[in-house]
Length: 286
Image (cartoon, rainbow, N blue to C red):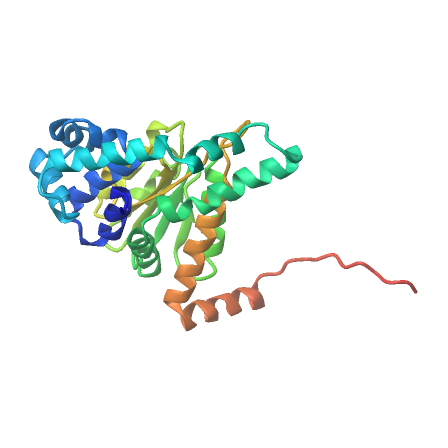
């Protein structure tokens, strides 16, 4: 039996904006969110009960009770699964060195990208960034701002007018006030979610810009104002891991490169010829 979350993923590109809000809420707290009433799920998602029911119909189910019964069956199967029990042991002390366990846990996070990022949402993010006629402004939180900076530095070599807002609600606010149709705001907000991210997303949207939010599986409140949301697993010890986030950023950049084609390659060539970087070389024996 196909998991309901997989059904939602497969149909993400068919959903209306309101239905996508329900889908994101469900995926952020799966299966718990779906085990609440339809009215509660709608309230959590900031939509209406009819919107929830339309989503249920889109994934091929006749009623909300049938939807919840499927969820309960999935939970029961998972609790009794040998794979589930084995995975719990794998995340414990287990065999092997600390290094091998640490690397393995991060590889698992990267692998989970295929379960947290719907392909249609990834494609939509690439399209937004590759066709942003009004410029791109990216911002992040206490740690994630460095990931935003990497995204900006790489995108700037492929497409024009890419900027990093280090103080989005301070000295850089003018970049958001200048936004309009054709502009894209990229907001990184990972747990513990920060209020400025939500405010920046709302401001950019109010100016007519498209909003791309890159967040964790628990979903930043900024996702409420997003056109596209890319959730990524960040579980790590002792701090949240950016292993999967780095892979996601690189995949997005590669997607933009493939989308813009020769124009991106020409811009990269101009960068190579124009920017002077003084490199050190090892001198061989005389």
